[in-house]
Image 1 (cartoon, rainbow, N blue to C red):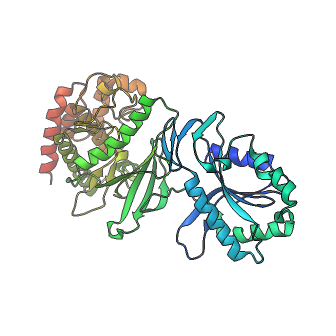
Image 2 (cartoon, rainbow, N blue to C red):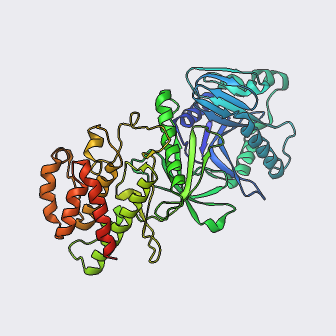
Image 3 (cartoon, rainbow, N blue to C red):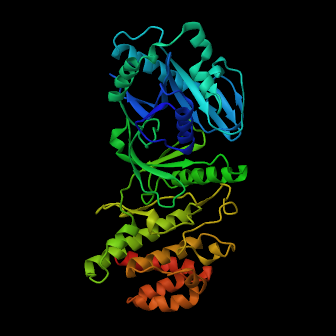
Amino acid sequence: MAKYIPIGDPINESERDGIRQLRDQLPDHYIVIGNFELQLPRRKNTLEYDAVVVGEWGLYAVEIRGWDGTIRGDIRRWELEWGRVENPFIRIERKAKALRDLLVRSVSDFPDELFCEAVVFLTGDDVDVQVKDERNRRLLLPGQLYDFFVDRKRMIQRGPGPLLDATMRKRIVDAISPLASPRSPLPVIQNFEVETELAADTAPYREFIGRHKLLQARGKVRIKAYSIDPLLPRAEREAEYNRAARDMEALTQLEDNAYVARPYEMLQDKEDELTFYLVSEWVGPTTLRSYIEQTDYDALDASKREEFGRFAKHLLKAISFMHSRDIIHRNLHPGVIYLTNSEEGVPLKIADFDYARVANLKSIAGQISDLGTEGYAAPELWMEDGYDFRVDIFSAGVILYELFTGRYFYADLPEMLRHDEVWQEKRELLDDPILRSLLDKMVSSDPDARSVGLQEALEHFDAQG
């Protein structure tokens, strides 16, 4: 069993399995250095390594992938059953060369015959590589590790290698270790520097905050990373892609409106063509959800109630404009409404249009079963009846109820199923008879009543200033 030096942690199960096989199948005097970033002198960017094997005659930079199935392609691209990717040898060969250059400069009397080769290790159970590439002699599958790395033919021809000497192995490791650090879990996204990852809760994407490397005046940006599972059926993969695409499309169609986070660009990951990044304006960390949770509803004063009215007015204006562009959000709730903390501009912006129905885009209603967020979705959505823009008016009414009372509209699923009866009880918690009357219409189980409610609510809150 090889000595294992874990500088960082594997980022997925494929890497974990690959590291385990390298450690368990190689001889005792071999070393496996796992999962690290290498900061080279006079270079700003780091190089990421899944594993480096210190063998007897040389070193190996190992790229570990969990791909399986039939793989076709050429020296530039590989065609997998779920999509196209860059030939992994392209990047790992650069990393292998950089690693050897570093060691030549750092280790005195570095043996000329000591090489650093690039290796790709596919850990999948059923792999059939049909790619014509002379580098494939360094493409390894499970069960091939010992024969490749030990290389009895070389041992017979040349005898023991220079790294059989424990002192030389230590010098190699000591040269790498000071410049190596645990690999960052944050992705590298083209022209953007990722600063931190946000808690995504149950969202179907990872979420990051970053900055454009060149356009610093733009300020912070929000980056949503959608990774499509290659094992999903084709129809579901298309639905996941459409979800990401409609998020950006909706933002683009609404970009001239101050109530919507500005869209910047949609990018495809350079190494994984099933990962997409949506870059948009970073409004700030405060959502209407956190605002409600932090408000003391037992000590409301006139100023706070006035602020409620201001938020209500601008939320309804935002929804009205959205509908004028033939966009239905379908997933409005306090967590997708971001507060700007602006005294002069708009106080809030709507985001997260990944469930939106956008004119001229194929609907995903039939492919995604969880439209709307439980507790905010109109009855016709969760009953799978026909629906239109009035589902957003219902959600807005529920949000206003929560904003003015600090209480959830529904306590549980049984209450949702008794909507009309429950509303007659809930409405009594509203001490403003005008607001009570407006919400009677906005949260009505009859969609026809909601449009009137939205217009009347707009006029009411607009008149309040």
